[in-house]
Length: 257
Image (cartoon, rainbow, N blue to C red; front, top):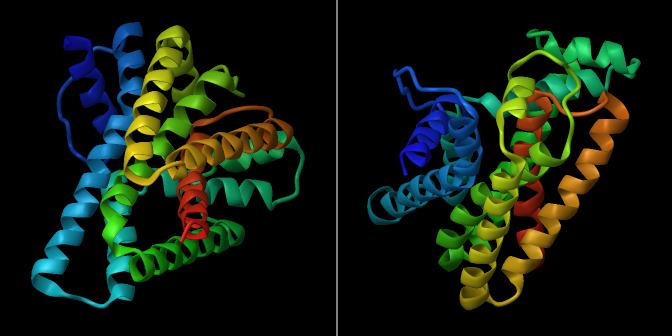
């Protein structure tokens, strides 16, 4: 229980903008717990989005388009733009059309290039557009959607993290990779998946299972693509996966309506 709480606090420290100003232990138990708590962190973020949705429904009644924009902005605020930064760096690196070593160097460059900016704009437009369409077509299920997408995108991070080797021997991703207990991560992945499938099957039939299958397919393709173009996993590529998975799953949801 203690390690789970420490892991939750670490997940807030490293994967959200919530200021946890406390020195926490960084050992195998706590780092493993941090990763196992990521999907739960996604649920908390999803609950925050739904609270925002209910406040708007009860008091403000802003237009659907404006609210879709607010949802996307709220997601950026809650993560501190961490994952979007990875998406931007990935866009700059991949579209440089350089060799693998040069792409990795561009990933580490903090400057934003033209292709990174274009990737950012495309990502935000797609996310706003998909959210807008869902709000228009099926507002009654937004509670489930707001929880499912952040949850599954962070479940995707676990799958990618536990199955992909890191490119660099040094760095935060490499350190975390060396600290985690893979068996515990796999156990958490299986339990999360079973609980999610059971709950969503009760609420909306096979749609939840389809979402999980689409998420796993996306991670598989992304993993293959990053190994081919970058040699493996980095922290930026991990963050980019979160953004890519969210947009992909929002789009998949539209196919169900």
